[in-house]
Length: 451
Image 1 (cartoon, rainbow, N blue to C red):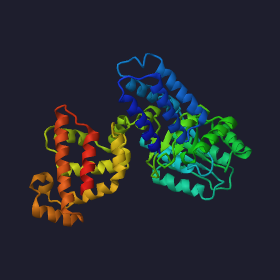
Image 2 (cartoon, rainbow, N blue to C red; image 1 turned 120 degrees about the horizontal axis):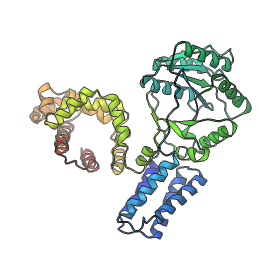
Image 3 (cartoon, one colour; image 1 turned 90 degrees about the vertical axis):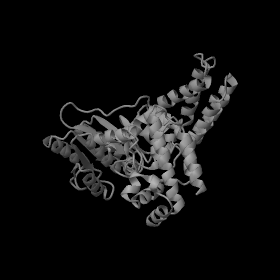
Image 4 (cartoon, helix red, strand yellow; image 1 turned 60 degrees about the horizontal axis):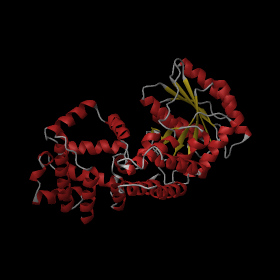
């Protein structure tokens, strides 16, 4: 979503860093570029104006221009202000000390509210909580059936009574059931409308009175841009909500809603949907997102994703093999499968620091998850001896592996070269010398285009 904005901002920041000294005119020129980049990303005009003014004030003052590295200091200011714009350090859900924590999901029709309810239920279940969902959207056809199906896939308890009863009564009944079953969390999926109206607000108010939710989350569609911000603003005027769930953040929208909603409504984004699958809902960390937009990566999120998918004993064994230079293609294949579980290749690489330019090359080279399929097919076409010792793979062996994997001899040769370079990188890491990841990927992409 932030690709275009990220590219523009990274270009501007790179220009500042390349200068030994900065003048006020240099800063003003950079501010004009930042203003245009934000407006093109569909960020609210008033929010853009305030953001640029705040950055300029800090960049001109506080001795930034007289510092040893003024360009880097301006980047630091932009990073801090971007994080502040989206909510600072972020906010967690409020959980009750006793009894079920009630989370009320609100939003318009088409925002992805029911799917977001199931995603949030799965996320909390994976944190070890007993979770139930209440199907109170009796307005939209098949909404109840949809939540029953998604709740079943998530493995959480679904409380539903069809579409004939009042949503308010269903919500109250579901809360009683959640208490009786001693669940930790009850998530209430409410009805949406095509627009904010009195009937919608009255229903929400009545459900809030009956269930006394600890958090009311507004679900908004990031793809609708400033309309999403307008909807959030209208909800804020009509009834209190505590935070935002941003859906379709993986789409090709320009990102203005995610950057504007906190400044306009005062309510932070708590979760962001990053894909269609139920497990593709992430806690929203404004500071981490700001770093990703500026090309600084998001190492913490990358580590968290890896920890979820990798067993501790496997990680220790992998570390031992890396230290002792015993890493094989079998281990490499295991890592490829772990990467697949962590999400799309572009998303994973985007969390690595310094990968901005390389990610652009990645797209130009059409290197995506199909590349992982190709690598996996080549490795599976090798014998156990060849996977343990790729140096034996020559002439006739390459032809046999290429035929077995549906690729060509050059592709097999390229994989063994890449693997050899990976082992060299691991040896360097073990000795405390870490090579430049962007330069390495650039080299891989250049060779890939020659194939």
